[in-house]
Image (cartoon, rainbow, N blue to C red; front, side, top):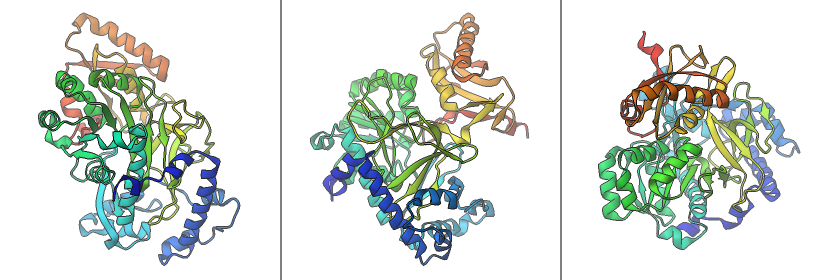
Length: 469
């Protein structure tokens, strides 16, 4: 097996076209047919009233199937308590529940891993052999675009995987997928620490780094000279938003001296990857429309939002693949979509992650996402390090103004400069986000060493109200 066993160039080029919409209609009919005749009584019951031959099948599906969020993958179904809440995880009930939801035998699962999200509780993703192979196909399309559509460029990549491993898909499954697509991998892991990462990259000649944008920023702050000497040709970021924030993007690009790619993928063959556009961010191209259909809904009501250029909503995917019923599942990402052709010439509509539904805060009616706050704070680099925390004194989403922030100032900033700098940040945040923050200045390094866990993903929220209990 290798790259050309996984890569379907015809489907790659059809992304975002009218022909693809017809393929999606056919696949949706096929999946509803399967669900109606499934031996799994729960699945067949849910889809029994849907007519696969209906001209309005997608609209019928939207009416019949509610949007399911990540609680389903944590063990719940349709608002029912999750397995974790029942205290039955240790008995293996979550695996059985997931098998029931997917309509497979629990022993068909060959890889059990998860994503970290931002809630602190891992979201499980259980892969059958077919699901693993689907991830290989999605990564093939991603790396084809990243390589400049050149197999020679793809083969000469030596990728240092600095995502967290343990149970995370970005570690184990991403490494497997790269190898299956003829890409050389050095699985260093985020858990190994900065010094070992730098050492192995130097000695083993890594030319591409894949990691969270938080970790890439951290390396710029702590090991700038080292990463410049290695001479990375690309940094590919994923697992959290950040590489699409202009100020963060600029910091990483300037620090590493190479292009930065923003990507999402692996689960259900998802392949989303940004094109090379310098400091400007044009969004991630969707390269897997034949694997699942994407729709937008309102973040609070789950009502449909028209899928058109510039539209914003919660991302919902409908699987069109074996091993999963055509339910409407949302990972909770709030996105903006761009349906006009990209000037880079690559296929697919584009999207930018704005935030997550479970991270949304409301300050006097204004909806605020931590990523947007990050964009404002990072725009004042290097007077600030870019590290901050949103301090909540009561449970979200409603926040009693002002929005309280802890912000790290840079070591070169004098005490008398902090108050004017706070006013500057406040004005910019008010102009962009319609909120005025209350800033508590903290010394450099006081946040950065504790914000990130072993996964090297930034947690922007500090729940001060929990400390009062």
